[in-house]
Image 1 (cartoon, helix red, strand yellow):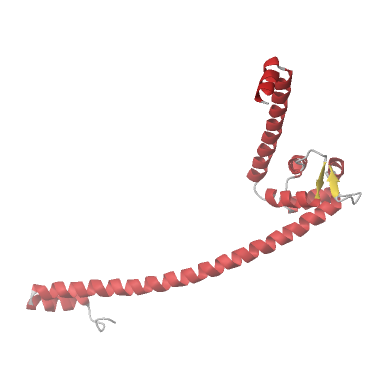
Image 2 (cartoon, rainbow, N blue to C red):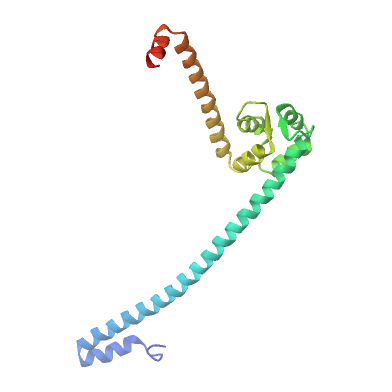
Length: 190
């Protein structure tokens, strides 16, 4: 279309007969023309891709929020199923009773949560070691755990680390109070 359906080679041969400078100018013209056309095409493609990326990002955010609400409702429903005495808290015993229920096991599989991990999850959610978990703790924890097993593993390690830290601090405090030097240090620091 640029050369009117003539071969650029034919034009080069004609220009070569006149002078080599015209050949260089024509080659320069070809390079600029090709570069310009490619630049315009690239611009259109990039603009289209950017518009789609913005739309896709907005759609992904909306979908993520919808999914979070959907999962939240399902976790609340599951919590209510486990809370036999309707106390607003699930105890370890209530949870243990549900582990034998095939419908509960299927529901947990549907939520991508392994039944084998339920008691560990419960222990992680029970931060105050009271033996029970509230609906808010349960839903928040399940939203964090849902999906990859790596998240649960990290939560387990964090929970175990906090328990060990508390135990070490307790032992350290007991040792300091029983130790003659510890009591001297405590009195001297006061």
